[in-house]
Image 1 (cartoon, helix red, strand yellow):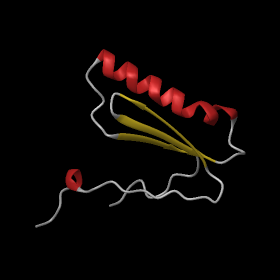
Image 2 (tube, one colour):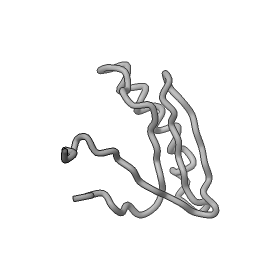
Image 3 (tube, one colour):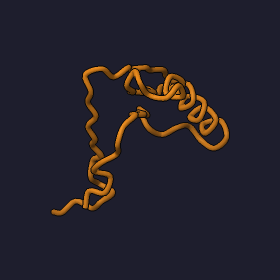
Image 4 (cartoon, helix red, strand yellow):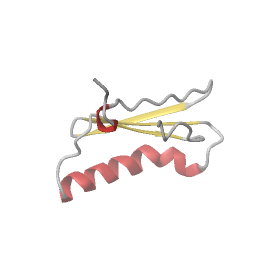
Length: 82
């Protein structure tokens, strides 16, 4: 049986020897950010921004449906897995 695109797990890998790891949570969702020390100053607040977005989304429409949200500073590769 072939898996349809919607059924495939989404997996990505990000690695660096010096990532800063910041984490928070909202209503059971783990919110994490990974960024290098030389990233722009906005990355230091990326977890805060994400938490605010998830809180707003949850209050305005319906509870955020995923167990985690992750922000990673760096190039995005492997987005289209066809």
